[in-house]
Length: 352
Length: 230
Image 1 (spheres, rainbow over the protein chains, first blue to last red):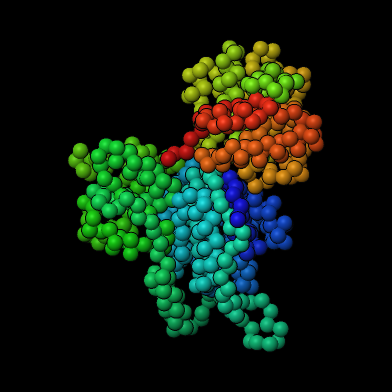
Image 2 (image 1 turned 90 degrees about the vertical axis):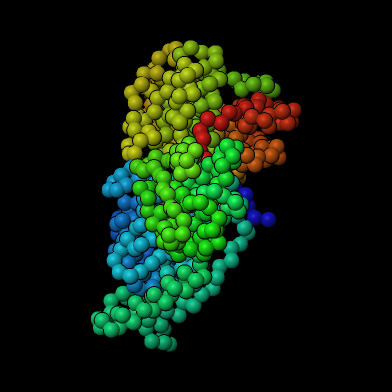
């Protein structure tokens, strides 16, 4: 049966988290994601959960560290400048192998930047914005329905691997309204939480949650353990969508709301006799190299489209590994690429 | 009070205010109302009063409205890169004028409605309508009691009374006649409980034919002005 509602992207992230069993939310308001906190403030008391507006993003991420240490499902959300403030906590939680979900609804940067949509935190999210050899799983939804699906999944992935999982959206996704179909019940994966610091009742040794290891040889062993986990995630969790790629002259590569614009580009190009396809990464880390292997022989070139100066384009180059030329077009500062912007770049590449 | 059996939604007051839960369609309805009022009045101002929502707002329709001779006012920094909800003095002047027709698109929830309180002394108490817009497909206005709460909170924050209801129940392009009628049931319950009359049911262009014969009150046919970038 389920429930069909018309909701804003940000509201859906919050509702999905509640449905996935998240009962602890710590955050600090920032446009364009404040509706997540607003919704949590109203919703958490209804389900016996905790909503807490911290005094800063730094506090919020450390509260996430604390709650996650007890094995509970926990989330925080922010937008670009706020996510920068969280980086230290993200690195510490990654070292301590804590599962939690972090939402970044990106806005224009650098610095205080602006409140309009952007995708310029790709490097920060996928390459490690904090210090040390760590990774987060980074999921990039492209619709309100997918915000629901992937937020639920983010909690499952986080528990499955004891890893931080980030929902990386942009202001358009957070603010737009679409129909969402909720299931009656979520499949909440059960996972081993025997590591959690939740009271040993004198029945077991106490658990320690920490990222400090005094002996370098021991720290190296921990790092090898993290890397083994990341390798398993690379092997198991790559996700992507292939759209119209079968006989495309150029395959566009775009994620999030820009992928939606690219579908409009494909339609318009079709009307003008130009064959385009789309490879839409759904996981940004692990980057869906498998998707490129499936289509790399088809097009004359790849064209990466981003609301940034060109960040994901580096991963596209690595994935295509010199086999096809890789081009880039994008807008910055809160400006959104139009169908015409992208189409004129396509024509430039094809020499039309 | 307009009759419930008339075909077209009419605006009988000089000041028309649209409020409700955010995401209920206030901005789209405000823009359409401004167009309608502009057809019969020379001096019309539509003010985007939203201090809550950063984008997808009625000011997006500025060019379309100005082309029709309708003036548009918005917070100074609306649709820019900063979140500074500074309202313009023009709104106060327009509300106090005796001739100018004013449409106020108010931000969502009681937070957005609070801004109206500042204009309490400017709003002509005998010459305004405040429309409560709701969409039963939205999560927090699905049942009677929660929706009544919204009305009370908005009235308290805005220091104005809701005078008319608008049923704007829809699921964007997936809307069926039954969805609209489902919303209408709630509209009737609210009306019975509060005595606030139902002014209209909104539909997007195309659905009105099927609906008009099944309603005993005006259908307000909307044209979409606030668009997504794809």
